[in-house]
Image (tube, rainbow, N blue to C red; front, side, top):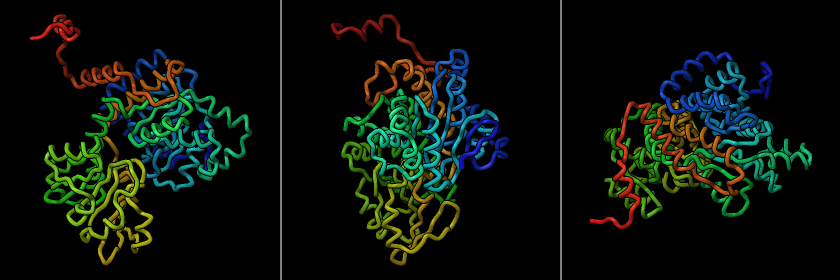
Length: 447
């Protein structure tokens, strides 16, 4: 239940964890020089002053540094978790106790509590939202479209207590949103295509300094880290099956190969399948990969990528994990009907018996990198959250110019983040000469 301490509404596991949270947040901040520079500017210019911002993000040490940057910029911030298993309770406690941030997140929270926290973020009455997976924006739109039956019970009960004018004001007051992840952007683009998106959204995920680095290097390393922490398996000599060869799949496949795994890629996109082949990976349908794999990791953003029909063909002891945003990529509902279990083999490892064979599901099919490990390294989240902070600033400055659609962070902001990151790494690059600029701008100069 939501409580108030020091006049700050919150629902976190234990405020006594705040000291450990402070140490961990400070450790992450050392690897986030771009966000630090933005925070220093925000503290002087206060570009978000007067704005109420509700964020639905993974509550981690890196996120804590983003939230402190938004607060430095003048925003009144409320934060809830975007996944029931991704919260770092120490970071949540630190934000509440030491900074007065309204945080609603507990690692391992059940479905009802998760949506009670979404409700609390909506009750903050934001004029800017920040999402990772579009659950917050999705709930707002269900209210706007009067689809109350599609709302989770805690949110629906609250909405039904509001007057018609209060419901209208809840959505009307929102200037726009930013979105962190591929899954969320997919949902939002579908909303825009259907003509139901009610305000502009900045697709942080589509920025080059986000998806080329966070998705590839961050997801690549943290996913493998989560699998190894949960299982302690030896990757060298194993056969790993990676479902999906987008930027996240590329990163995971590369890291697994680097650890000595033989990697198979499954895809539905012929272009990505060709790319995986030319990158040196075997490519085949999941049905053919199922008997060969020791480890399966899904990163597609789609439903039921690994189904019971595939699990029936797997080896005894096969390990199945997901690193997509939602826990829908492994068909757990059908597994529950067909198999015996689960039995906890280790923390975050459930054993199921299917046709006399063991199948191990990691982290209940949720994001393995955040459930069993610590998520992306701070140095890569530095760029992702720089995009979030600058995307929010851009949104409030230019909202009148933006249509009700999904927009990229402007290229000049993207390049500025890259420039700041290079500077933070102590690296310099060449600049164009005047002659080179003229040549690139011309059309009549050839051989």
